[in-house]
Image 1 (tube, one colour):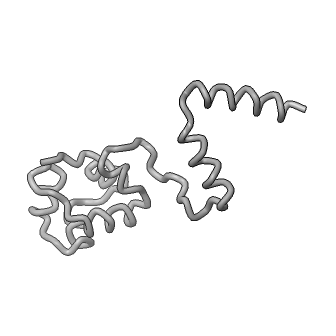
Image 2 (cartoon, helix red, strand yellow):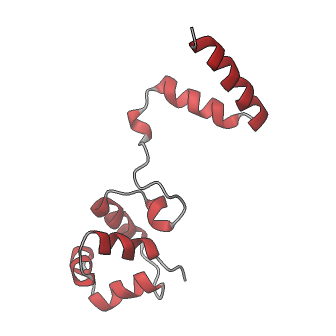
Length: 108
């Protein structure tokens, strides 16, 4: 089982009790405590509720990123999304070349 340190940290940072979060999620305090300790997996629906409650990403709750609030893709234009996809597909060497070209172009 995964231990969800992030939900404990988020709860404590928000000055909330386990009872507060259990009530919000519609579960018992004892069962919520099991989420924090890793004795019970958080159901996906409840993980989504926690992400919304704290205004953080599911990736942050799962410990996959340290970024609490990533930029949602729907705030990017189509051309910005295409640019990001293109850059992500490049090798590190190609990214460095592109960066040097961009610096030359935009220094003027």
